Image 1 (cartoon, helix red, strand yellow):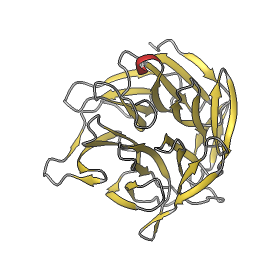
Image 2 (cartoon, rainbow, N blue to C red):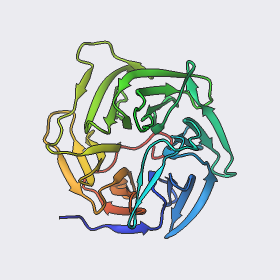
Image 3 (cartoon, rainbow, N blue to C red):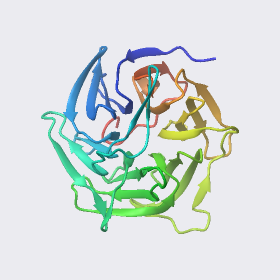
Length: 303
């Protein structure tokens, strides 16, 4: 049984990366369109033209929006649905971008790390110090795909390091309330990993510092994620289409079905952060629903 959904926008061109803004609007990316857009009262306005494949997004300590740009996809049309494919002929390279929300000006902060080009940056989260974690999902070509990892960087463009390598197409990323754990979803494996941290951008060195969250049975893949007020991980789920909630303390997973097999992102907003905003990407929709547990407040946005 699917929940009651409020449709906030239709006709979006593969939306992802929603951010529930304090004014009630929703910032999101349209990957196929190559834009950062704003949804407000049913209207869609372009904030910035980015090109490539804008993906994850987050508000930084300076109030700007930071974008993981994956460089673009080939696009597959099946009826009225849209799906991302392999690396396109006009692939523009992976990068982290900063968007001034007032002027729409775009600045590229990072396109490589230690001489290794970023391939397909995907999702991003800021810690309380102002640094940010991001995943590189990589790109797929007809006979091979990239090996990638998880990075930590500063918003002024001065410092970037690869902290976790290798992973299988890492996608969603989030931090625990005490910021001593970073959670990372892998798309093809349908797994969420928890890594204990020693500090900002630093993994703990204990033998049990990496663990796998108890997952669901069946065949599915994971996309982006958000952390709720209980510390559980709410991860957008592909193929069977919905939101899976996983616990870091062994509690059985929960699943809320959505009317799109390509359910890609969730964020929290509204009163007590108990409204879930969810992107249904293949059908180009942004929807909202009541959520029983409030979201964990995000640095520089909800706190």
